[in-house]
Length: 459
Image (cartoon, rainbow, N blue to C red; front, side):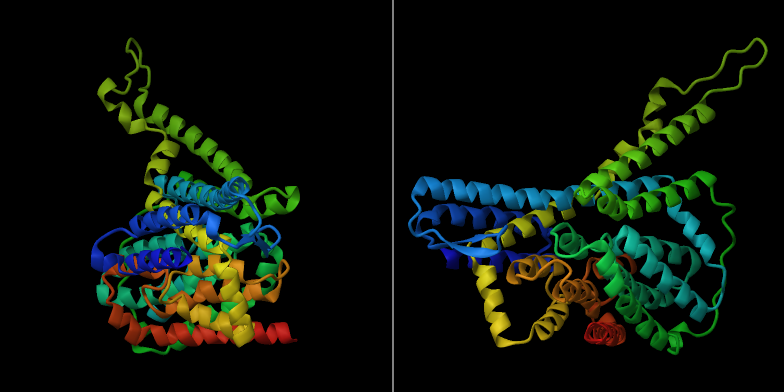
């Protein structure tokens, strides 16, 4: 039955990898393999001789356990993993909703005000730092979407934009690696108790900056980033409410790690607090805008004019609207992936594989290879599996190095990260164009940051 479960995982993962070729969203194979994997665990439950205790991080001998106790053990394990997975998903839903509320008020348009140059090289550095900073707060995927949208308003030439989009992918992934809220993988390690926010930032901030600066510096001498471009006409002043919601939303997301540090509560509770505050402001502003827009001024002998009955949908709650726009396919994809890895972990397969790896090569070499592998294989299951492989204490260097490698390694191929895939779709970037022009920049940045991190720990 173990072979069946492994086969289900491999088959499901092939479906995820070939998503674009099969024209089937990756959430479908993800959910199917989760269900079949746990069905396989249930069917073969009475034949398993070992079970992995996630809390103690050790294999249990269950050869003498009766069928009823085995059933209880499976239910408890399933509930444990579902609870841990749900913490991550609720956290992501909260963050996504805040971002959509900001976008509802056109908050991200305020970022365009930071770009006041017509020199490509200067624009390159501005975009690189914006991608690095934004991705650490609103995650690398959203930062990429926001910046490419802004670039479309600045650069009319699509051939110029693809070069800048390539740099955005590299810098956004680098920015997400050092922040506990910047990438799904770092969020998983943080919420899984493998790293703390302060130590993660302390040890990964500079390596991530190196990973961002080295390729950007090299790119600044390349022909596509030389010369000037024509600045578009000004759109006018940014609405004050847009700026308010931008800074409030970003500030409340940044507050989440602070809340966890102060109250020692799970991060998703802090995210729900932040969402509540942002939603309160959004609803207040929305109601005020509605009144100002549709309630007429009372003139002498004239009644106020109100919004017609058939137009009530125009003042829909911004919070409800944001909830309808969050990426539920991504949420369900993460559910399927994490719960499938949990099934493999429960049988001790992940732990045994980790022991074999540790006996055959140095941990740092394995993590370096893991980063390179994340360019081909989604980094979420890689990190989920690695969390079951190593029995290292919180803030051990292995967890920090995994966060860096899995977060930045995906930049080496355009399909290796969510940021790359969304940029590929928005700007129609060819896989082979990126491989030829950007992969080598991402690779030298990855090695430079990794080298700095290893040197930093050695000293």
